[in-house]
Amino acid sequence: MAIKLMYITNNEKVAQIAEKSGVDWIFIDLEIRGKAARQGGLNTVKSNHSIKDVKKIKKVLKHSELLVRVNSPYEGLQDEIEQVINDGADIVMLPFFKTKEEVEAFIRYVKARAKTCLLLETPEAVENIDTILEVTGIDFIHIGLNDLHLAYKMHFMFELLADGTVEKLCKIISKNKIPYGFGGMARIGELDPPAENILTEHYRLGSSMVILARSFCDAGKIESLDQIKEIFEAGVQKIRDFEKILLQADKNYFDDNQKFVHDRIVNIANNIEERLVAEGKN
Image (tube, rainbow, N blue to C red; front, side, top):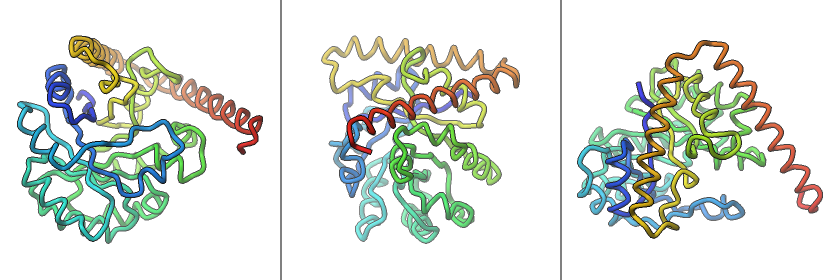
C-alpha cells in the first residue's frame, strides 16, 4: 500500500495542484501556542494559517482529505476543535501533548466526528506512550521529529532515526495496530540523507505516512503555479516509482540502507557539533 503523503498549505490553488498530483492529505496548521519559542532558532516554517482557512480549503478539495493541526492542550481547545470540525476537517491532529489525560480529553472533544491523529513530539509523551495507547479512538499517530529532537538537545532531527528512538516507538505503536508515520521528506534524489533512503526507512519500519517538507516544494517562494505543478507532478511520481522498487526489495536491501542512513546521520550530527564548538555555541 502506498505511503500517505501530506502537504501543508492554505493556498487553494496549491492545494488543488497537490491533490491532483496524488497528495492524500492537505494539511492546515493552526498551531501557534508556544511553537515560536520552541523552534525560534531553527529555519522551520512558522504557520500563518488561520481558522478561516479550514472552510476555504475544504471547499476546493474533491478527493484529498483535510487534516487540521489544532493547538496543543489549553482551555480553549474544545471550542477550537468544534469549529474546525464544523468547517470540514476530516482529520484533527493534536500536537505537543504529554499525558494520557490530555489525549482522552482530545478524543472526547472530537466525539468521533472526524478522524484523530496524535503528533507525538514530547519526551513526556514518549515516556507515557504505553498508557496513552490505552485510549480508544486514536486513528493515527505521527512522530514529530522537529520538537522531539529539540527536547532531547539533539542537533539534527534525524538523530532520532539513527539512535533507535523512532524504531522503538514504531514497534510499540504497531503492536496496537494504529497507523503511524514520522518526520518529513524532500524530493527523491535530494538532501542528505537523500529522500529515497529516508523513504526506505519508512518502509522498513512499517510507516504509512509522511509530510512532504518545505524542501519538497516551497510554494510560498515560487510565483509560477506552472512550476509548482511541475514539481508536484514529477515529485510525487518519483516517490510512487521508488515505492515499486521497495515493494520488491529484500531484507538485505533494507539492512544496507539502515546502515547507510545511520552513518550519514551520525556524520551530519558530528559535523554540526564540531561547527558549534568552533563557534563557541556549544
